Image (tube, rainbow, N blue to C red; front, side):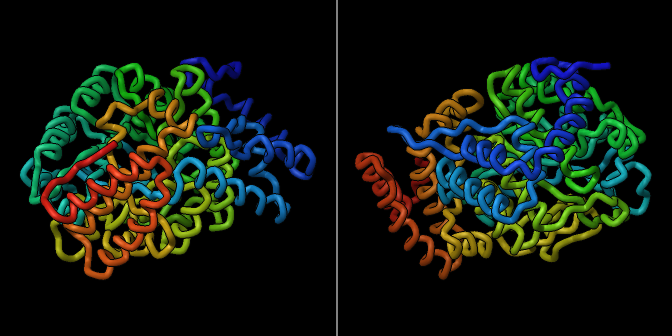
Amino acid sequence: MAVYDPASLKAEEFINHEEILETLEYAERNKDNKPLILEILEKARPVKNDRGCTCRGLSHREASLLLAASDPEIRQKIYSIAEEIKQAFYGNRIVMFAPLYLSNYCVNGCLYCPYHLKNKHILRKKLSQEEIRQEVIALQNMGHKRLAIEAGEDPVNNPIEYILDSIKTIYSVHHKNGDIRRVNVNIAATTVENYRKLKDAGIGTYILFQETYHKESYLKLHPTGPKHDYDYHTEAMDRAMEGGIDDVGLGVLFGLELYKYEFVGLIMHAEHLEAVHGVGPHTISVPRVKKADDIDPDDFDNGISDETFAHITACIRLAVPYTGMIISTRENRAVRERLLRLGISQISGGSRTSVGGYTEEERPHDTEQFDVSDQRSLDEVVSWLMDNDHIPSFCTACYREGRTGDRFMALCKNGQILNCCHPNALMTLAEYLEDYASIDTKKKGYEMIERELKNIPNEKTRAIAKSHIEDIRTSNRRDFRF
C-alpha cells in the first residue's frame, strides 16, 4: 500500500487514496465540532500588517472540515472570510481572458467530452495558421489581450510543433491597437522536453485539468487513449515545472466524482506543488460537467447544486488564498456573479468553444466542446462587472516583467503585488475603453477609473498611472505597465 507523502513525485503517494478517505472520515466525524471549526476559520482569516495582509491558508484536512460543515451560520462565516481574502489579495479586479480552440481532433475516449474518438458525427476541424491569424484578429477586435489555447490530444493532427507554430502566430498578429500579450496553454500531459519547448515559446500558464482524482473513476472515464494513464497525467505538473514553466493551473471537472473527494485531491495537489517546487498552483479552475454534443450531464450522478458550488469555491479560497481562481462561460450570469465575491479572480468573456468560432457571425455549435451558458459579448461582460464594482483587467504585466512562479507568490504573500496590479488594471481598462468599448461602457469605465485612481495608496504611483491613462486617451501609445 502506498504511503502518503506530499513531497513524493509518485501520484499514488502525493494524491493518496487512503489519506483522502481518512480526511473525509475526519471531516464527517468533526463536522458539528463548532469550537474546532471556529478555530480553523480564525486561522484562515487574513491578518493585516505594515505592508498589507498575510494569510496562513489551510491544510487539506482543515479545508475538508469546512466543506463538510452544514450549519448555516458557519457557512456564512466561510463566505464572509472568503470575501475578506479575495478583497485583501485581489481587490475588486477581475482578469479577463478568452479560450481559443485550435483543433478538436483527439485520440482519447473520455466519456464526458464530445471530442472523444468514437464520436463520429461531430465535425472535426483543425485551424490553419492563417485561420488562427483571423481568429486572433477577431479576438483583438473584441479587446482581448490574454488567450488560453485548447486542442485535443492527437499526435498526428496536433503535434507539439503545431502548438508551437500556433503560439508563434498568435504573438505575431498586431492588428490596429490589438496585441495578444499572454498565451496560456491547455493541452494534454506531455514530456519535460516538450514543456521546455512551450516555455521557450513564451507561454504564460500551463493548464491541465485532472478531471477526477479518484483513480478508479478516472480509469473508467478514460477507457482508451494516452489519457488513460492516470499516473502520467497526474504527474504532469511536476514535469512542466521541471521543464521551466513557473506557472501551472490545476482544476477538476466537478460532477464526475463525489465532490468532497475531488476537493481533497485538489488541495493535496496544491500542497504537493508547494512541498516539491516551493510554489503552489498559479490558478485553480472550477468547471462543472455541462451539456455538449452527445454528452448529457445527467449521465453522471455526482452533479452539484449552485449552493454547494459556492461552498466549494469559498473553501478553496480559504485553503489557497494566494492562488488565482477561474470560472468560465460554462456558468450562467447569476452563478458567476455570486462566485466573483467568494474567490474568483479570472473570468472569460465573449467566449466561443468551437474551433474557428470567433470569425463566424452566428455562434456555431457543430464543433463546441460544451454549451456556453453566458453568451454575452465581452463589452456586455465588462459593463456588468463595473456595475458590480469590479474592475475588468486586461493586465499581463507580471508574466512579461518576470513576476512568475515563486517571485509572483513572494510579492503576493507580502502584499506588494497590489502596488502593481491595481494601476495596471486601470491602465489596461483605459486601453479597452478607448479602442473597443461601446459609448455607455466607455462613460461608465472612465467614471470607475476616476474613482479607483484615488485608491492607489502610493502618491508617486498614482501620479504615474494617471499620466499614462491620459496618454492612452490622447494618443495611440499603449502597453504601459508597472
